[in-house]
Image (cartoon, rainbow, N blue to C red; front, side, top):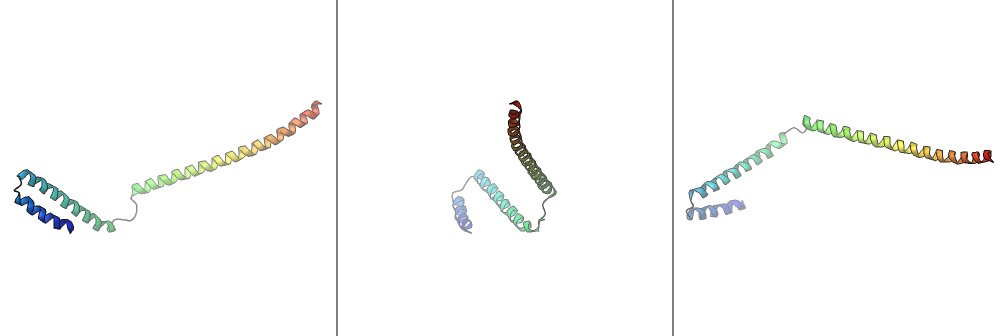
Length: 110
């Protein structure tokens, strides 16, 4: 409402100055484009509640792909963690065995 109150004095001032045709055309085109923008915005606002709440097939496929990738990443991490645990256990066991073997070798060598 505030812009409408400013628009009327502006239009009166513009008409009192006798603008040339080019300027009137520019203002007219701008006004028409602004009007269409407002109408399109209102139509979108009114029709938005009636649009489907379900994601589109493309969105659903995209979400499914993301979920699949996340599951693969999780599986890779688990597999990697299991391998690391096995390697740690093996290295501990190997250290313990090599220590015993070296003692055993010394006993036999002497």
